[in-house]
Amino acid sequence: MLGPVILAASRSDRMRRLISAAPVTKQVVDRFIPGEGVDDIVPVVEDLTAAGLEVTMDVVGEDITRPEQATAARDAYLELIDRLGELELGERAEMSVKLSLFGQALPSPTTALNRGPSGPAARFQGGHELALANVRPVVEAAAAIGTTVTLDAEDHTTLDSMFAIHEELRRDFPQTGCVIQAYLFRTEADARRLAANGSRVRLVKGAYKEPASVAHQQKTEIDKAYVRTLKILMDGEGYPMIGSHDPRLISIAQELAHRAGRKLDEYEFQMLYGIRTDEHHRLAAEGHRMRVYTAYGTDWYGYFMRRLAEKPANLRFFVRSMISK
Ligand code: FDA
Image 1 (tube, rainbow, N blue to C red):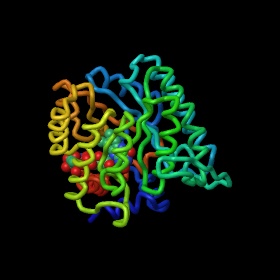
Image 2 (cartoon, rainbow, N blue to C red; image 1 turned 90 degrees about the horizontal axis):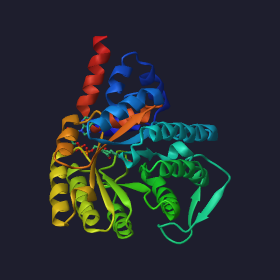
Image 3 (cartoon, rainbow, N blue to C red; image 1 turned 180 degrees about the vertical axis):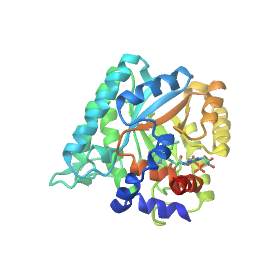
C-alpha cells in the first residue's frame, strides 16, 4: 500500500522541498543517480561500456514551469551528446527523454492540430509544439554521432501527444524509440500499431499513479498484460526493448524471443542503474544486449521517488539512514 502514497508524494512540492533538503538524502539518491553534471557521468558511461554493457542516458527532470527550463534541458542533452560523441560509442550510448522536461506540459496559447495515431485531428494543447521543437535538435544531434533517442512514457494524459511526436520524429529519424506501459489498457493496441511499423519499443510495467479507469491495479494483472504485450512485440517487425528487473519476465522474454526466431541482437534487455546490477552482468555475459538506463542531474526528485515507490525496502533503507544520522 506504500507505493501509491509515495507516488502521490512525488507530485507534492512540499515533500519535494522537505526530502531534497534532508542531509542524508544524497547518499541514498547516489545509488540510483550517479552524478549531477556531465563531468560526473562520462566516467560512469566509460565504466559501464568497458564492462560490455550499453547505456541509455536520462537528464533527470520533469514537470517544468517555464520555457527556459525546456531550453536548458535541450542544451544539457546537446552537451552530453557532444561528450558522448568523443567516446565514439555509437548506439551503445543512446538517450532517453521525458517530453515534460522539454515543455510538453507547459500551458501555452498555442493549440496544435495533429493527425496523430489516436485518430484523425487529435488535439494537443499546451506545450506539444514546444516539446517537439526542443526534442528535434536532440534527436538530430544523436543521429549525427550514430545513435538515437527513446521517448519515455509519462502519465497517461501525455501519451497521445508523445506518440504523435514519436511519429513525427520517425519521418526523418526512423530509429527514434518510444516506451509503452503494460499497466495501461490501451497498450496492447499501441504495441500492435508500433510492432507493425518496425519501431524500437521499450516495454515497461509503468511507474505512475494511474486510475482504475485506464490501468490495471493488481500486480498479477500487470504481469499478464506485460507478457501479452511482449508477445505482440516479439512476433512483430520492430525491435523490442525489455525494460524490467523482474526475473520471471526476463526468462519469459528469452523464451518468447526464441520462439519468434529472434537472434540475440534482435532485441535487448534494459534495467535501471543501481538495480539488480549482478543481473546486468549476467545477461551481458550470456551474449545479450543489456542497456543500463542511467539518470543524472540535479532535479532528481520525481525519478528518485518512483524508485522508492517500486520497492518499499528502498524507503525503509532511506528512513533508517535518516534516523541513524
Ligand atoms: P518489479 O517492480 O516487479 O520488480 C522486480 C524486481 O526488481 C523486484 O522484486 C526487485 O528485486 C527489483 N526492483 C524493481 N524496482 C526496484 C527498485 N526501485 N529498487 C530496488 N529493486 C527494484 N516507467 C514508466 O512509466 N515510463 C518509462 O518511460 C519507464 N522507463 C523505464 C526504463 C527502464 C530501462 C526500466 C527498467 C524501467 C522503466 N520504467 C518506466 C519503470 C517501470 O515502469 C517499473 O516501474 C520498474 O521497472 C519496476 O518494475 P519491474 O518490471 O522491474 O518489476
